[in-house]
Length: 92
Image (cartoon, rainbow, N blue to C red; front, side, top):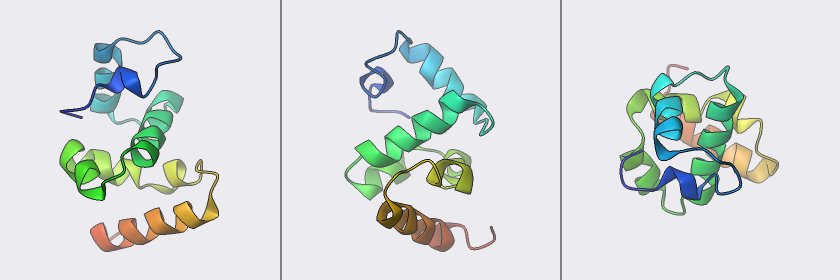
């Protein structure tokens, strides 16, 4: 993520910007912090084009994975993100 301060998404934790950036760079969906970070990015970035600009293709693929989407409470938002994933990554 390039332009947004990641610590703003995790204000309630004592994690440095570098720790959060390292987590994104690892892009490991089995890591709970990674899943939480992607969920927060999806839910707190109002403009979809900002999400596309902020995440690399592989990070976006992980962010739109079922592992992340299933952690979102709103079924309507889950469906929206699944729809976006199906359009952006039809091979999945």
